[in-house]
Length: 120
Image 1: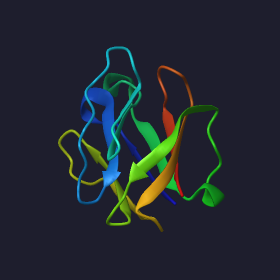
Image 2: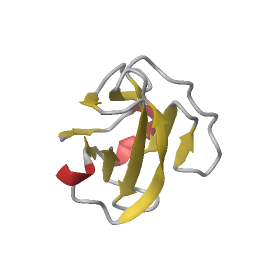
Image 3: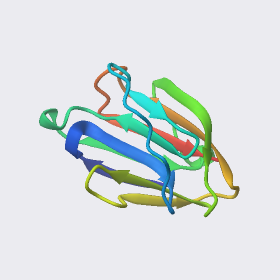
């Protein structure tokens, strides 16, 4: 399990394979946008302070209050990273398969100050 506290630029982070992914087109009003190879997710507005980001295997994590995403992510390198708009890699986690099951929980439906991500 890995954890970081930050106020990312544009309050936006990306979950993708370490070799990159195809970013999704933004959808006005949505908190999460996806493609098969990239998941973009919103955080607490950067002016309101940091968001705690936790990522790891589901067995290591305590789920958050609100499950906001459940799906799969292409991970051919078997390394999942979290990156930002101007930051290439904030966190990275090894995964077992070329397709990874992902669940994302928010502490609040619109202004999450904690985002928990399981990758199995």
